[in-house]
Image (cartoon, rainbow, N blue to C red; front, top):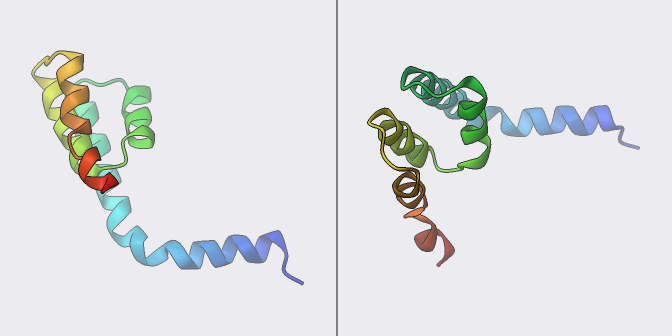
Length: 85
């Protein structure tokens, strides 16, 4: 019978290959968000809520030049219709 511990380690083993790329990108996008003046909590929330990495970088760049919030939201959501079809 499998234990929760064995399921956990199976999950860790399964995610290791993708972590090679995801972890460095997460660090880079976090540093960029902090550099443009986002509070740490907001940068963390953006990482949780915005799935597309390119959208995170676009949002950080737009935030750095004081773009209105509606434009930032529209710019980060522009790829969603393509993902649906």
